[in-house]
Image (cartoon, rainbow over all chains, first blue to last red; front, side, top):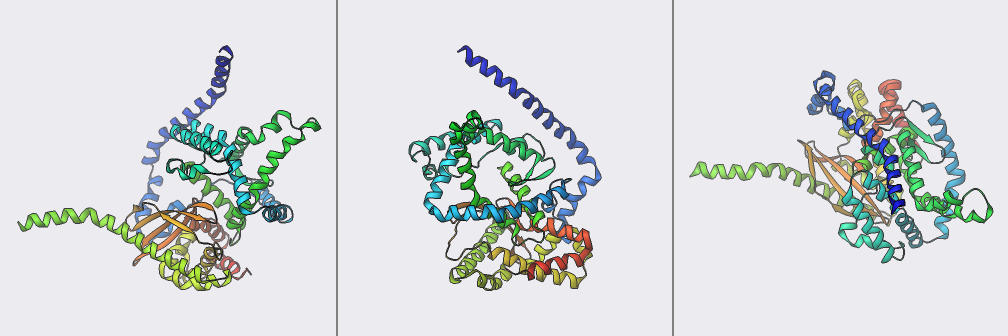
Amino acid sequence: MKSNTYILRLLLLAVSPLLTDCSTWSKKSVAQQPTAASSATKTTPAAVKSNEAQVEEVDEYAAEVSDPLQPFNRAMFRVNDGLYTVLLRPISKGYEKVLPTPVRKGIDNAFDNVKFPVRFVNCTLQGKFKRAGQETGKFLVNTVAGLGGLLRQSDRIPALANVPAEDLGQTLATWGIGHGPYIVLPLFGPSSLRETVGMAGDYAANPVNWGLFWHGGHDWEHDWTMIPPAANTLRLLPSQLATYDDATKDAIDAYLSARSAYIQNRAEAARK
Amino acid sequence: MTTRLFLTLLLAVTPLSASAQIAEAQTRLKSAVNEVLAVADRTANRAALADNVRPVLLKHVSFETMTKRAVGPGWRQFTPAQQKQATQLFSTLIIRTYSNKFTPGEHPVITYQNPVSPAAGRVDVPTDMVYKGSNYSVTYRMEQVGGWKIADVVIEGVSLIANYRSQLDAQFKKGGANAVISSLTQSVSRPQ
């Protein structure tokens, strides 16, 4: 009992800076609103929008993220593209060849199911309690009735089908934190400062990586801890390469196309 | 009596017209999608698909609106001839991009959600699509341009037009209308 309250206190301490941060952010945006409304420059886009003659200005189509590191990012983008071709594509093809589609589907389901804590924690951090409950229901149904998560039985229950997956990047976005600079990460590709932080947090919260955290890197008897994260990376390769190809294949400027697709997709994920 | 009848009629008709517009846009979209899928079913290989869906898409998609939006504010500095050329090139590129998303022999299952009208003359039709075992959210943006036409396709939050806007706007800033047109020419002539 005593240790419980201790842990609770620690948790509260850990979370409190985030909470204060969050409240200052939202206050800021409220304070800015009246000035935005009164300033003439801010009102013009709305006026333009309603004007049929200038239809080309419809502004859900305006640009999206700051990219001060563009020269570095473009270089990294080219390096990644090369790495995908010589390294990841052959591995991905091999994986698809060795395992039939239903088996791969089962593996995807199992890894998704195990990732439950990431979604649950982020639903809670965003105050989406109903969705946190749905996630818990999904996890129980799939673990118990879906052979430990190999089958997504929860899709048969309308209330548990199509629950948008929450992650830390979306939580930070919900708290009003912007992307910061756009960053192309080695191998991972498109990201931003906010999303990189989010990805690191999600990595730590994903049980697949816990073995590596607890035991990894020190002695040979714990080499097994490498297996779950590596398998997780492997099973994600085909779909991630497909997403990359979709964004770059018919592009005029592949770098800009991938950036735009990534930012738009993350914005939509945060909205849901 | 007649005024009363007239008023009742008016009351009945006014709210209907907005929802009738939405319904009409959705009906148009459904028939467009069905026509495309029928063509896709008949076509065995991907290279032929672009040629085969072209007439269907020309009928249901407003490529003029798409091109204008994809270019952005720079559009007004295009001469009419340049606008025409850009539209032609961009249509070809869009048709190719769109048909490349199909795999012969795979059938998408589409569920239509409730359409919404974000502004007069515009209707967004959200759909859920199951394709090759994965779920996708696809929203079709319809616009009233001499009949309801598709003006954008938004897949998983990624608008086709916004995506091209980010690229074409950069070209325009680099070298105006000529840079836009030459970049489009280059993309269209790139071997598949």
